[in-house]
Length: 379
Ligand SMILES: *Cc1c(COP(=O)(O)O)cnc(C)c1O
Image (cartoon, rainbow, N blue to C red; front, side):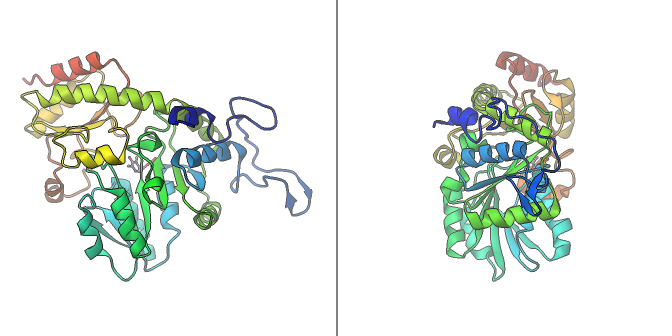
């Protein structure tokens, strides 16, 4: 099955009881048992629910893994995966992982003895020297936010295998439509499905896919024990979103490429960060590892004042956090998503006060370009 077909016919595409083509929303919290202690397929809805199972089967097929899981948010998925580990275990993470991942590891899970080191995984040579005796996993995000750095998943996973570490990849920015980390050697793939997979800014959800039965059993044990499940209604909304992921990603990409072409030649724009640009430091890796570059672009204007003026003036780019939906969004990472990182550290990473991030939506590209053109003509 090719990608676009799998989005629609993957997983469980019709309800086996009724033949319904849209999977019904099973709200029941519990299920009748024929004999005490002998449930049929389902018993209690935290443990399993048919609507949630349908979206879990779908993401499993899309990521080509062994088992899928749907969580109440991306952070719930990430936290549950870290709960597979023990007190005293050490993680290596990409240094510009999503702020929430940084926060949960360093401020919450650290209290339970999880240790972490943050390194620039886009330079794979940094990985091996950072591995410690108690290192158990490497957690990669690629492309990263907001600078769209790319890590070589295949090489990172190969190093991890040699040291018996699990490779975990946050695939939120690329989605399974463009990139399949498990095929490149990853053990666990994570998604904030709130972003492209949902795609309509109307559901908060997280997904995880594992590549073997043991990890599947272990993650189900954690999920059933801690309870961070996706509701039946949100599972259905997410499935509806995923059906159009292919055409959406193609359009996001087309629009993004046109906008990048516009930005690179604009005199007020300093750097443009987009993996599809041949000047991007990891461009050839991006071409090899993924089938598309996505709809996220970051670019720099001279000063924070100019950045503030720009985001106030756009009409179609809404000033908001989040990404990956039909409507275009704009943000200033230094003042919003990355404000909690000290300024000095931000400057080191390249997240300057004039850096602007856009999530290119599905509006007409000419309207989007006109909007940016207007906003870039500073007072
Ligand atoms: C948004 C995001 C998350 C967190 O997901 P939520 O659904 O907001 O909990 C994790 N990773 C990345 C890359 C994200 O963009």
